[in-house]
Length: 286
Image (cartoon, rainbow, N blue to C red; front, side):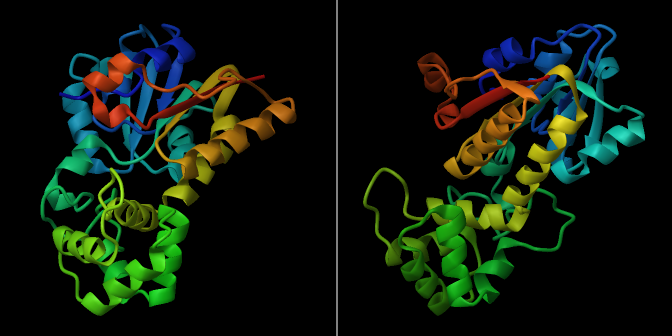
């Protein structure tokens, strides 16, 4: 079952108008897209995702709303071009639910997780060339350690990078997880490879660069009084969102709607443990 994270909070903040135009920049499996479309009459949701396979599943999951949803395969850096192609200058609201989707994380062939063995892939857009295997098996040890520290906030990055280089070639997700666990045994609740996998995923998909593109583009494509909602799952992302929103508010261009970031309710976390680390921020353009 698909649970769109913080669905009620998103709808309350976006407050979709029946005739409005909304951009779901991360359609994923279509949960938020369908929730917004259900509020529309003559309005439309432009549902974008860089993962063509997820987008196809979103089409299936939003059956019944075909007349209210426009699907486009696009990364954050391509959103302005999508709107231009549709002849739309500005939208009434933008939603971005960052990070990997549940489909990506649970399909072993996508290589995002070590819950089952699979190829070291991690590409959100499988048409791109760079895979996690190339980073793991060809990066210099220092570059690999820097990547793990910067993107994964992994304090044991040097030790892990050294072990990875010595174990090459690393051929699968479980192989990599074992190498990391042997180099840096478990000290808490998280599996020792969790931060390594997160760092590699961010690097493969240039997620922080794409997020910066979103944060620069969203204010330019949102109408006055329009709403921007961003859900993040890592401090690296949330810090960027917070600073971008604060800069817009200081410049008198927007009003922050979430004085403190919103977290999912206890009830939602019980129903969907994957929502536990979600952090929602919203602002209104002026």
